[in-house]
Amino acid sequence: MGATLIEKLIRHRTGNESAKAGDIVTVRADRVMVHDIFIPFVKDKFEEMGFQKIWDPEKMVLIYDHLVPASQVDDTRHFRIGDEFAERYGLTHVHRSDGVCHQLMTEKGYVKPGDIVFGTDSHTTTYGCVGAFSTGIGYTEMASVLGTGKLWLRVPETIRVNINGTLPKNVQSKDVILRILGDLKSDGATYKSLEFAGDTVERMSVASRMTMSNMAVECGAKCGLFAPDEKTAAYCGITLDDFQQSLYGDDDAVYEKVLDYRAEDFVPVMACPSQVDKIRPISDLVGTKIDQVFIGSCTNGRLEDLAAAASVLKGQKVAPFVKLIVTPASKQIYQDAMKAGYVETLMEAGAMITHPGCGLCCGRAGGILTDDEVVVATNNRNFLGRMGTSKVQIYLASPLAAASCAVAGEIVEPC
Amino acid sequence: MGRVFRFDQDVDTDQIIASQYLLYPTIDEMKVHTFESLNGDFAKEVRPGDFVVASDNFGCGSSREQAASVLKALGVKAVFARSFARIFYRNAINIGLPAIVCRDLYDHVREGDQISFDLEGGKVFANGQEYACTALPVHLQKILNQGGLIASLDKEDA
Image 1 (cartoon, each protein chain N blue to C red):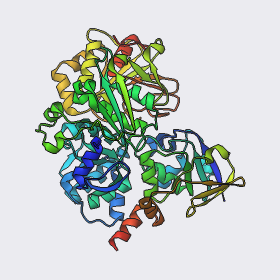
Image 2 (cartoon, chains in turn brown, red):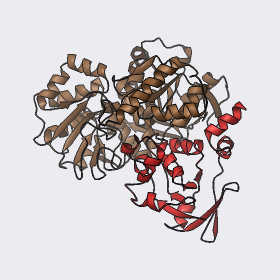
Image 3 (cartoon, rainbow over the protein chains, first blue to last red):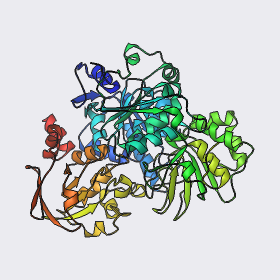
């Protein structure tokens, strides 16, 4: 009997060769991530639990992203508490303005295939893109991990998603994951592992895979995994060892469900207000007037996303009265996009480029909207009130689609 | 006995406590904004011992533990749902707020109904009927019985 990717990972890491879906195991963390918005709460709980030191300060990464740059005077309290915590407990990995946490965790090499990672943000599922088991936890649980290095978890059942064939030119991995979310629904994978396979995902860049792992949590999944391959190794700057090479789901493993997709069947889609699983083909939405477009976030703020946007906006202008806000996911991406000329192209088209961070996606700063305004955005959530008031209409889309809408001033299909 | 506050499916953590309130220094300052976008009077009307009853996928979305903490701080005795999102579920148990899967309750109670709950027996009593709840996994039951994760860690040390 074969094993799923997550079963193989947990067996190797716990030494329990018979661990299977449904078992409760205790695992050791290879890395943990805490971000600015919850650090004061983590600190309080950590001290309330009576811990004197972090089990391994080298394994903790503290990232300021939700509040960078500060938009309210109270935000700075989080930086002060974070800085004090970092100094008192000897943290060496602190990023104060380098970008969105999930981008930095992979980009800076904190996460490797086969690792077990916990973060205080629900989109911690992102690192499944390199074959790591990573998931979000609350601040009380994080405080406990910081003290002990350990966490219990239930080995999840797996839903395998096979995608084979060639995607249409105007379809990106964002359209793929949105379609899957629409099919599974927002609780369709609760407590489960999503495992993506097939020649379509094998051809995807690590950045494209990241978009899909990032959004796995939107159908409730505990993780969204890709088998590590040559591209993963190159991205992480490593050679895959035997364990890492073994991380793929066996065909004869026990899967709770298998979804098979033909890549040619995908079309550009959007998640309509205000549920992530309310998926419609863009062709049904054409003509909806828009007020703003947002291209950025840990979902779609990477170099290939900015390149896609620039390819649409080259020599074009953003429609009158439409605001285009572009937020690179990290400082590194921002710099690479400048070198590649994308920033210049986007600015000439009329885009506002903002500092890397979570601001607009989490509704705190950098372009929040008001009643009855419509925004097409490349981030991961269109919840009620997410990017301003509860009457803002948020449509989630790919960078290609978002850029096309910015030029048209209304919802259009990307070419 | 406590009153029912009833919510539909896919109640997300932004709806339980919106992002802009997460920066308030204490849970007591945050809790007055609980469920603001769904029921603006909730925080004013809820009394210690009341219950939240919801349909599927309660607490989906972000990892914010404040979503469970504000409910506990307002005195909500337990949250019953047809199903819970993963992180909310762990968070609730870890802070000692019973998050109880009860498949049938949602369809058989209305806003304001008086119900009672037997945690040990895993039963809810509403409108003359008894509804069975799904038992918590042993590990979680232990954490909840000890009053949450912090108390549970203290016991491990002892």
